[in-house]
Amino acid sequence: MSAPGGLRRAGEVLGAGVLLALAAPMLGVAAVLIRVGDGAPVLFRQRRLGRGRRPFEILKLRTMTAGRVTPIGALLRDLGVDELPQLVNVLRGEMALVGPRALTGDDVRRLGWDGGAFDVRWTVPPGITGAAQIAPVRRCHPRTTFRLDRRYVVRRSARGDAAILAASALVPLLGKARARRAVQILAGGRT
Image 1 (tube, one colour):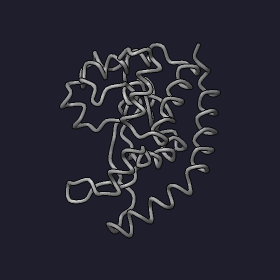
Image 2: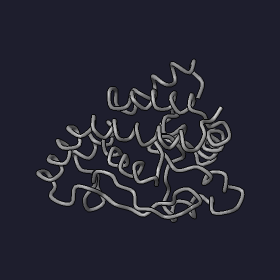
Image 3: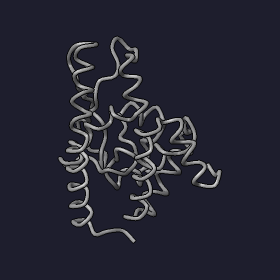
Image 4: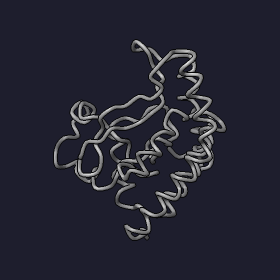
């Protein structure tokens, strides 16, 4: 059963605040490494579509320069640390801890998800993590991603969010590839 809106939002704010406080030292180190290794800016900002397809500016640690992933950027991506500034987006109410991935308008058009048949995906806020992000495959086909997003929206619950967050917690500990394998093993080999 899904938590009422106000209770869910309070949990999101509390969770994002605690995680941001815990991640602050790691974010500080990452910011210094980016600044020393590649210069400013440390943050990457991009317009994405949120709940109701409303645009907002997503925050991430910058991991690329001149169209290429930097060495420190590769590490930050593998550990999922580049996503942590999105906790600020959660505090602002633009995102949730769990939900479908926030996409750009170009992504939506490229995927063909701009029609009404895909509106269900935008009935909830986008998440820092979600079912498609922890799927035990390197890249989900767009149909699989939409199926996972739709299933999440329809079955959305505090228990489901906790399971996705627990699986996502493996990423900084194991890296994305090993975390995906662990999720696959925990899911009994199902993809």
